[in-house]
Amino acid sequence: MANPVSSIVNPLSKKETLLFTVPGVKRQLGMAIYPLDKTGTIHPYQDNGVPTGYVATPGALAAVIRRGLVTVYGFTNQGVVPEPEKPAGETPTPAPAKTNTLSQLMPYPNPLSKDEDLNTSYTGLAAVSDEQDISYVYFAKQVSAGQHPTLREAILQQGSEPETKTTGAVVIPTSRLAALYFPIPDADEGERMIFFQHDSGSGKPIQCIKINAKGKTDPATLPGTTVAAEGTPLAATYVDNADGTRIIYLYFVNTNQDLYQTYKKGAEDWTTPAIVPDVTRVLLGSQITATHDKKHNHVFYIEGENPKKGYLNHRVPLV
Image 1: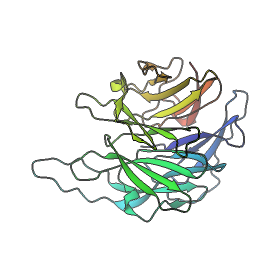
Image 2: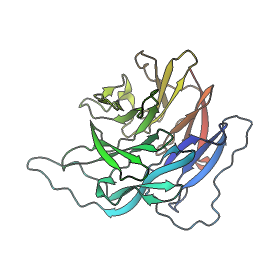
Image 3: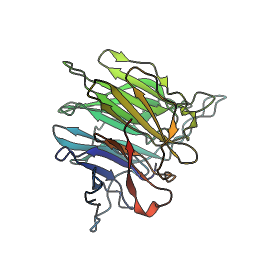
Image 4: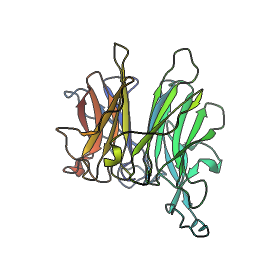
């Protein structure tokens, strides 16, 4: 996955989005500031001669807030994955050439653990947090040769070793990930919703699972998402309305690189995915990230018609 990106609303200025990328070939984390208001000023990342860094490319980024600080997770390179053994009569799913270590990149760089359980040869990544002490990081890992990777959850708590669990959800090797966190009143642990791509045998639809203190749900397929391109970038947001209704939004692309939106309002079913009107197609190889304000989802991606401009903000009205 080229062009890693993640975004988060600035905890110190709610009118800004912080956009994290890995610009150029220096393998360093870069940050730009985008106003949510059209009249604001964009503050782009400026490379003044940064030395070559450690961030894995291709790769992915995921930003969360912990105790008021922005924390960014990503991958660092750790060498070459050996060719998986071929089970009798089966052709194994090939692993990518590089293996990566799940790492914190900001506020300071450090692998999350010395444990190889947080090494993976896939680059799907998503993260959420309770904005206090706990982060939940999601990645894909191949458990045994010949099998598609499964979605794993790493629970990160200050002062403790990461607790890694399998969700049991099977993802395609090229799947990208998106995740949301829903606080639960008077509960220590909120609910997480994770989106990924799955091979159904007749297509590669997008699925989601929900995880909370009581356990996890079985993967549910979002209707109509077989139009998604294999390995589509994913981005998700949610908005709680004043009437108590929660609307969850998901963005992805089809094989023509059109930007699609589907959403779920309260207890209603997911809507049939539809092309977002009045926006430019997404560049092949661009990822997608999104934040929101009271009126819009702010969907960032590289436009197919303007690749040299890098990531741009596309304002999509809320429903």
